[in-house]
Length: 164
Image (cartoon, rainbow, N blue to C red; front, top):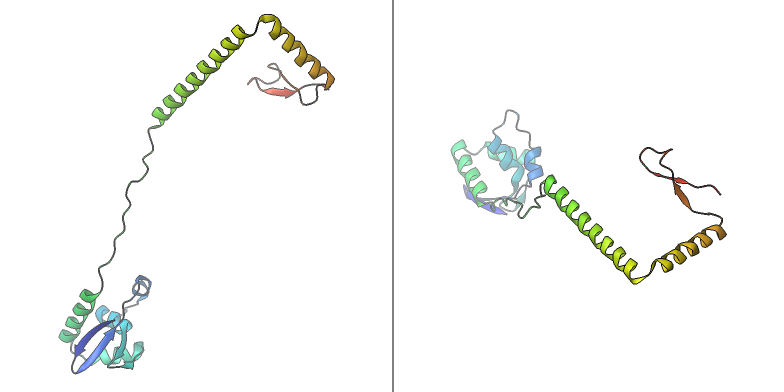
């Protein structure tokens, strides 16, 4: 509450919210008078509504009303201004593409190294036996869930379900 002493009376004004301030309709009336009438809560302990406040403020001389408005406005707490800090700044798209390509190349190199190590650890005979075992498992499952690459039917080289 903001108290302003005028003519042996104590005027108490409440702080208006931003929604209330934007909802004010001034029309032909003085904007300061409408704002003060909306914010006027009581006069020396007597509650007021908007119509009563407009009548009371109309009886006050304009120079005194102007000073009351200045006191009301400058006794309000300072408006808080919010700002943003440390916003995420996305990297350039070309930088991201290069980074992804480097990671893919590194992954391929790692996989190739792993394959070479496996080939050197296991002989060709063991790899052949492993392939034959996979073929037996596939035959016994009657090719359920198996897919076959068919580049003739799909120009993009996609996968197509195999025969049962």
